[in-house]
Length: 447
Ligand SMILES: [Zn+2]
Ligand SMILES: [Zn+2]
Image (cartoon, rainbow, N blue to C red; front, side):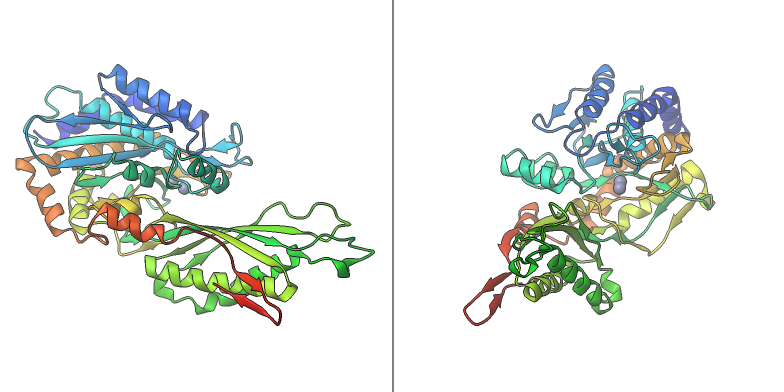
């Protein structure tokens, strides 16, 4: 079938696709709380005749479209979650889709409706799994960790959790298109990959006392924390350029009253980097810096480290397929593939560590990513054209007895040989411990 026929299968559903974009934009929910978004999406899928597998105790679902002929399984994802962004110009319940995941959901709807069109699966083999995943943004770590402690989730990212649960078992290739902002006319863009990350919560513990009358009886946890942050800042020039290390701490509500020496100060940060090894090495330095702040003041410091996301490595052979399909949708001069490296993180990285995967960007958003002015300026581009290119990719991979999918699978070089090996590696990042133990004559530091 001609490529144009597949493009038409998507564009005939433009109204429904754009309606989905607007609805989800207006009803943002943050990670693992996207119950309404998930239900809204599920209804569209079920109305279209799909049978869904629900995650159940967390939002999200997936469905399989079988061609009836054996072959590879292609996984296409859309993210359900919004950001906590109370200052966004159109925030609702303190949240906003300041990363454009609403457009991804609309794109996924476009793919789902197109695949129900007569002839859509003709000449294809294998199967396609469409998946609406929760919780891509790595935020509200405390809340997610409480879900983890309750045994509801095991990992903080939605895709990582879905992978852990086995919802991606049997999938051979995965991709999704993330909404992006371009001011240069480019529609589809893809770089080499992006940073991985880990999440860290830090609690400094001091001793309260009268801030005016007897500060000498207290231990100022807030000062210890600010010294720790200062020490991290002094380390920045030691990070190697190629490792793309990013450490960006925030201090949360600290101190109880202005006339009390703060007994507690909390800091949260990510440590990001281009490889798991560089993240682990940078994290050791960060811990050493945090310990220094505690030692200076005689305070305690406790850390809770959690695995975040693995570095994203876009599979080169899959990129070749994507590029052709993107050009078919938008034209040669609107598609840009580069060797650039993203300094943000996504849990598509975790998939890319164990299976060929790809996470390109489709333009159509405007404003600032994660900013208060973020908006979907060109929903047709962000949703409909995105769905068209993704559908073409699935077709290209699964036609001709899956020849191109097999090439992508055969040329893939995984970072970890299996999902089990991957989980074993990231589990090493999980720790809750103190960094400083005071002894009779000094202190022991364990960073
Ligand atoms: Zn984001
Ligand atoms: Zn995002």
